[in-house]
Image (cartoon, rainbow, N blue to C red; front, side, top):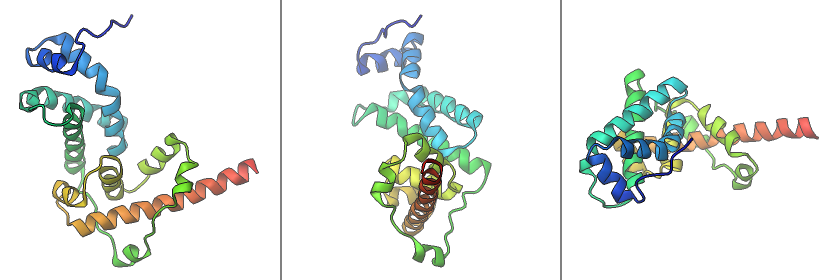
Length: 190
């Protein structure tokens, strides 16, 4: 049996968490855990590692909650913590391979929007997950999280041009994978 939320608005929920009320902490977790797990899975392929990062993110959110000043979106503030925790997990497990050859950079193209529209969300997320780590990380930060190339450079310790190259290469690889998937679908159904 699922109980209705006890804290009816965001301010009340934040206040409850700040006072150490377990029900408020549980409601915050229940409200956002699925969304934050999806973010973690975009960066980390391993389900267990993604779960660990999500839990660490909530611990960090509760630890730093008093620093939230009500400026901007509360969910956006928490999302930044989740993304930062995911990036820290990537860095601690292996060095982020973010180099792109000049030859690859010259070949890059934008994916065609209509190709993307024909894909199911789950298929697209699987394709993004299959990208190499550096490409996937930059693609997620830019295309999904909305960070600028300057911000990505600062987060990952790379130049803006490397971020742009990684994004373009990710798009190029995605376009190839989308074309291949569409070809397979036509052969199977046609």
